[in-house]
Image (cartoon, rainbow, N blue to C red):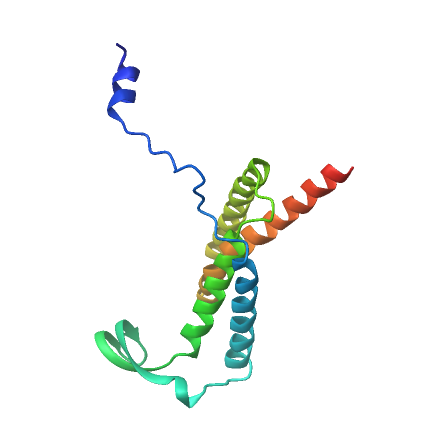
Length: 171
């Protein structure tokens, strides 16, 4: 008995259940588009036009807060539209990115993996560029952009690779 056989017998290899998928049902893509669109529109209204509805000015529990002074574990007054915008866009992009395709095949899974790696490399290049060439408040903007950039890049790269694959099949 070799070391490999011993290791193989002592390690439980987890296999997904038959028919199990980490992908969301394909209907989630439409919901994701709605969430992302509403979040984007609200974000433009908030940050470009300065819209702050009084209804969303609420007291919230803050683990860590820095305004004029730093506070931890306190109840703060906060305009919740920023959080709503962020959650809508993040959940929307997540639903778009991981919704099942109409015909989810092993080839599509391979394209998903390739898109993941390409988008990861592009996002890493963006982060390196940000660290090297942006400073002060501009660096904070780049950090905020990086909240949605990984999912956005993945969606774009995946769709480009899918279009290329479809063209290859038609030719």
